[in-house]
Image (cartoon, rainbow over all chains, first blue to last red; front, side):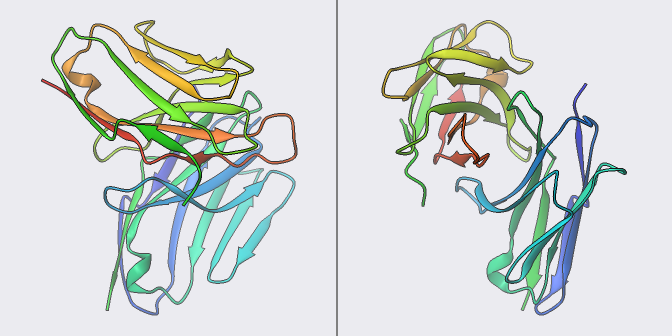
Amino acid sequence: GENVEQHPSTLSVQEGDSAVIKCTYSDSASNYFPWYKQELGKRPQLIIDIRSNVGEKKDQRIAVTLNKTAKHFSLHITETQPEDSAVYFCAAKNQGGKLIFGQGTELSVKP
Amino acid sequence: ETGVTQSPTHLIKTRGQQVTLRCSSQSGHNTVSWYQQALGQGPQFIFQYYREEENGRGNFPPRFSGLQFPNYSSELNVNALELDDSALYLCASSHSGGASYEQYFGPGTRLTVT
């Protein structure tokens, strides 16, 4: 069935370092890949997304890359700050509109 | 913050009871998706409603049902509650039929089944 694998499950970095989170998806018909940030006790917030016709997208310190052939996509956060600490979820949307989420990565940015 | 709202924020029910959760979509959005998020897990797709009809369903039993109203708000109903139904229930609002794919989440309803 449809599946999204996300790694690592936890990630600890020093403030100012970069963080990379990777996801793979199984459904080759997936055409939209959002990333959500969820702080403790709060709703998931959309932080960046990419469509299948684009290989890379950047928004300030956040970038996402997509390799359709390998069915991989990654989130890159540069110059990390303590307020980046949260759980990050990747997701893949198939043409039926269903979002399949990864298991989440708990990012900790140490001052 | 998004314009998606959910009620109630917290709910405690007993096993076997029934529950109704509510979601109001963001202005301009015509589609509502419901997700179950267990502690420490990613959201799991329950179903999606578009034009007042179910438009896709995840791997959840029939005791999970829903409705969408003409104003695009939605309800999630769960019958015969089980302990494993304890979770955060999230709705997400989006617009189908346009160029935008984004889904925006509400704050969720925390359901505890005892």
